[in-house]
Length: 260
Image 1 (cartoon, rainbow, N blue to C red):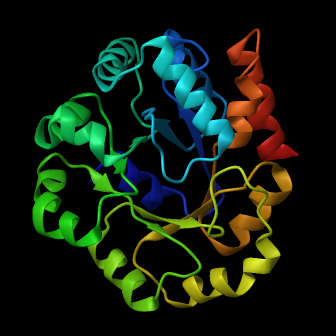
Image 2: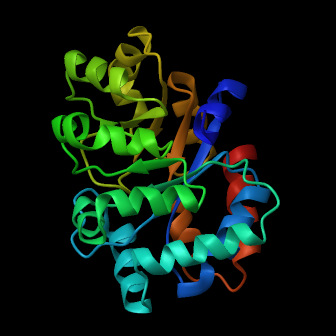
């Protein structure tokens, strides 16, 4: 059991997952942000590995990624930062997830990437452009050997057959994209009520978190009516982009999400 599975065995509702881009706003902010998110109420933390050609990221996350790349962020640099962070971290209870795209991982070396991720206490990986059949036939064992959960994304257009296939292959959670759009677009959760209820009625073995467009207490609370929790990225990136004090900005943001 990794820390994602442990979290979902202990907490069933109102799970808050926060995304940030590694190397943004400054190259060495990773540890500061991780510490602040952990102590201020994030249940899961999703660390974005910046990439020059993202598929699903909206302009805010794209811009944060481009700035991070200009700052010098790489997978190697991120792993070095995570090792340093854990040397000074007494508690590794908050699950950490890496989110990125396949090309940089392949350049790094897939098996080496998974091995190094495990050594940094990473519990899960999101690679939206890794096809499900390739995962099942080529990479599933590598993830399992390194005790890493692979997180699949679904959308309102995903068929029940594919969702059930994803559920059978998953051992962490399922990321339900609120609409077929890029990140950062305002989520009209009421418009997707049938989609969320359809997923809920499927009685999947894995928990579901809703992402894309969740940005405040109201949208977080609404998402939690249909799923185990929600993922927030763009709104948090905006909250820290020009912050003089990342810890204060993070505390203020998470308080606004959790308490309104």
